[in-house]
Amino acid sequence: MEGDAGRDLGCQKTMDGKVNEDSTQADIPPCCLKAGAFAPDPELEANCHATVVSGWFSEQRSSDDVAKQMYFNNPMWPGEVHSLAVEKILFKEKSDYQEVLVFESVTYGKVLVLDGILQLSVKDECAYQEMIAHLPLCSIKSPKNATVEFIRNIPEGKYDAIIVDSSDPVAGPAQELVERPFFEMLARALRPGGVLCNMAESMWLHTHLIQDMISVCQKIFKGSVHYAWTSVPTYPSGVIGYILCSTEGPPVDFRNPINPIEKLEGALDHHRELKFYNSQMHRAAFALPPFVRKEVKCLM
Amino acid sequence: MEGDAGRDLGCQKTMDGKVNEDSTQADIPPCCLKAGAFAPDPELEANCHATVVSGWFSEQRSSDDVAKQMYFNNPMWPGEVHSLAVEKILFKEKSDYQEVLVFESVTYGKVLVLDGILQLSVKDECAYQEMIAHLPLCSIKSPKNATVEFIRNIPEGKYDAIIVDSSDPVAGPAQELVERPFFEMLARALRPGGVLCNMAESMWLHTHLIQDMISVCQKIFKGSVHYAWTSVPTYPSGVIGYILCSTEGPPVDFRNPINPIEKLEGALDHHRELKFYNSQMHRAAFALPPFVRKEVKCLM
Image (tube, rainbow over all chains, first blue to last red; front, side, top):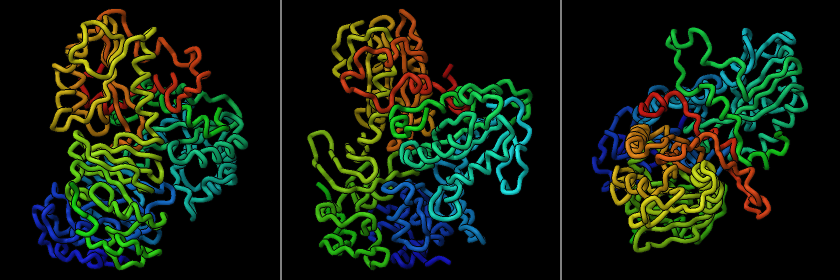
């Protein structure tokens, strides 16, 4: 499926494994130099293709074209690119649905990439995952029924909590995940006083989108609607946000967890130690800078 | 001072201004293609040199070498590079002390770079600056004397607050800014119950360094020592931290500002509206993920 980007770039000198040790002195194209700090790796070099070039992964939208891959970036975050040094490519294949890439990075451990978009790294996945799960689940008393999938045909009023770890709403199937019918479906599936936590982009880059989502949710969720955020270094602008909503019913005070993780019996006994989430981080996630309140007018 | 990186890369096709409109189809080296989203800019192309190549700025340590600039990055944050699309270079000159670069970025407004290291952008400087100033100043009752410079010869016990916006402690003059004699000097200059706010790197990348700084400060500052952090998208890993210390004397409760900005008379009247800081953000800054407390053992 992929062009041999390495050859297109004229990087046979790296492709054949003869990498100049002191690459600052090399006369091969800089786009095909490996970072000097890392030893040459033949397997890595053989993968000098669409998404990893010269030992660096750069986030992108489409991986068909080398030029695109190096200098055209995602429409969701134009004008910036975060690149990670690659120690070893572990897996790369095109499934029926997505192009899947897994690599060992130099700083962030193993990294999963789908269709050129970084999904998670071992080092910082704790921030996104622990927050998206615990922000809603620690905000209700005794969550039993939670779902993340197959919500189209679920019975009305069934769930205590729904967690939506959606894709970015660029053109394609993910688009509908920020639209009204989707949120109506979620609200219907929740019990009275049930909670939704939905991925909601970056407060630095997407206040227009956050405004749209919040205003749709305020119409549909008659309990409360809040925005929270946390730090995720490998995501664009270094943060990710969540919309927290509750349906009409027993009131939910998202900002003060009624079900604090510290009091959860046996949580530590089972070595299920959290790396990122605690009740302090929970409360802090709802603190918003003045510029966010100014740009997202519908936030209370 | 700089080599003509453009020519070295064989990018005359962009240097002479004839940029292929659809650069995905171009046969010039991808390292010299401009991002398709931005119109060709002759002035920018003429600056196809050390720190900006092909319309993108990438953070780096040394700007003497194109290969270095593209693939060798800062020893403080190895294995990752954040790149910003450049709309226009506004200023570039080598002063007696530093190489100064100012450019208009596509996403973050004007950006200041010193010796290849991004210092601030118009879009997110509010986060770093407002937090470094207000975290200490809102933690004491009526700050009158604050300083950021010339502390070597200042009288003992003079200052209510000292704010240190230091460079990263890579080899060079900044190294001493994380060492014991420096903090002793600061402590001496503060009145009893006076406060220090010192830049303290990233909790994601530099827990070893944070551990060192905190443990030095705990020996010197007999009041309290805390770590706080906030989101700054254009800094490595998207966060920056601060060490907050107070000297022996009236106790300082950094986590609950005694002098809340919202109550400051006339702050809004003078159109000195803050974009990032408020008392919510102040309190949130002290929330630390479990992994930080685990890695920075001396934190209380």
